Image (cartoon, rainbow, N blue to C red; front, top):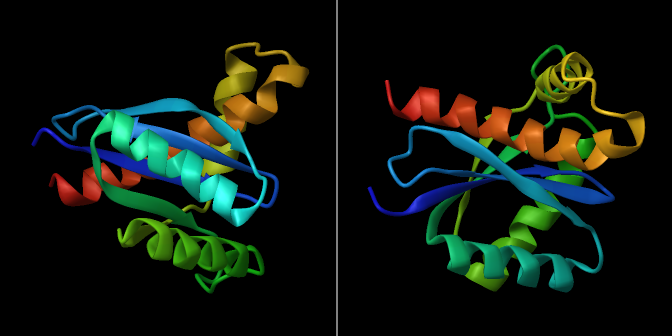
Length: 139
């Protein structure tokens, strides 16, 4: 495998991003993009996909505690549908429950200052989403 997987933690104001290594073994947080228009967001992601040789997209699907799609799921679905129109690449979904909490706990453990946590939180959550995907597909 020479291509990479790009994972997204899609929110209303930002999208956390993580990418796999070329072997599809490790999830690496690469940053956050601030949301603008859907077109601007798609262009930024498309550029990252080209630069990183991405051939698979993964997004966290917000589910409630019963496993049903939450209100935030419509934000994710709307953006993913638009991204497909712009890139032609389908997105696979992963249950993202607890990934933000895991990211918060990690940042607290590392003593990351409160002002720097949000961008790091989104990227770290995207890396946890990607880890879940990789474990599922590499076992």
